[in-house]
Image 1: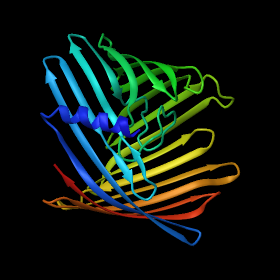
Image 2: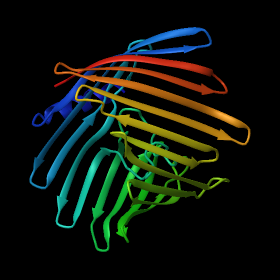
Image 3: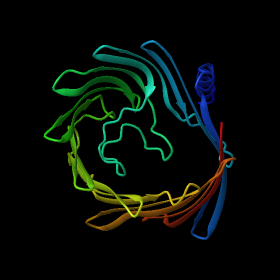
Length: 302
């Protein structure tokens, strides 16, 4: 893992033109069952790109080093070389493979979700842009140590954006068919997606969501079924040029009751020298009980 991280950093640094990023020191606390643990974390981001005509090299890395557990994650979101021509594009390397329409809840994740970046998947892809579709995408990725083939079609019909997807790979990689749609209804943006797993005994998953601007902030609410029922609501508001507030609440329940729940509040203070972020999270699950998750971080950009 360390070798992979160093190679990723070196490749990104080689793309010197247009490089930007951040460095962050974060203190993450955890209080559960009368025990408090504090974990200092070094985190960062490095974004770089360089173009030569239709050829584009991109790197987006979010390394994270937990000093308490001595664990290191390279945080590779994108490390890719791509080429765009008339009516087509193709690429190889690591990059996210978005198949979801929902924004807060994940119905069929190809990689474990991360709070600060979308994980990249290694492989290659080809895109075509024929009418009446806005995009046709074919990809071959590595997921859960197995090859995964992906087909995706995006289009627009009667003022509604739609997405059709098919995934197939040997288990434990997923095998599923999915569809999603997004439309505007007055001040609301409403969207939905559904999946049929080709291997599971309970194959159907689906969810709906809506978002709109309210009181100078963005409100988003979603509900989904993935074998159990999930609810999520988020609100974010830029209070001024210097302050922002973000809040998120989640609930996971089935016929036996609440399986897990959580809420988080974060205040962000932006300054010329860097940012300061103060957060407080509260989680619950049947095994661990109630968990408090305070955090404090400072971040500088370059």
